[in-house]
Length: 57
Image 1 (cartoon, rainbow, N blue to C red):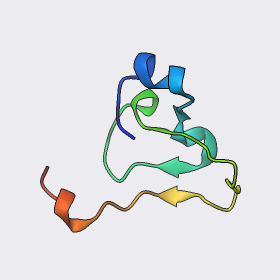
Image 2 (image 1 turned 30 degrees about the horizontal axis):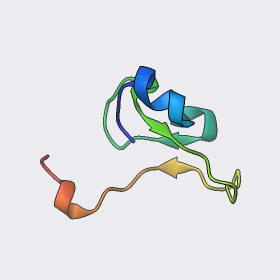
Image 3 (image 1 turned 90 degrees about the vertical axis):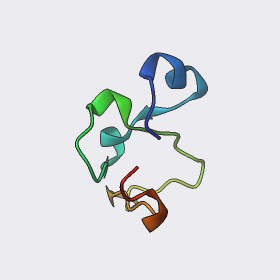
Image 4 (image 1 turned 135 degrees about the horizontal axis):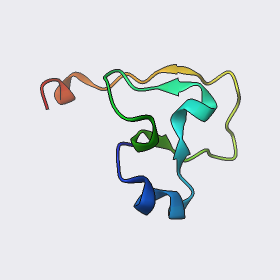
């Protein structure tokens, strides 16, 4: 999720880098967030891959 940290953190979103999840492009660390689910496992790490429909957006 790419968004304003002041808005999304109140819904449980956290900086993705805390979970080893990285964006595929340059973005401020505090703006790229995830909302960890109950089934989250530390093995779920890496660079996010967007579908081709988002290329060039």
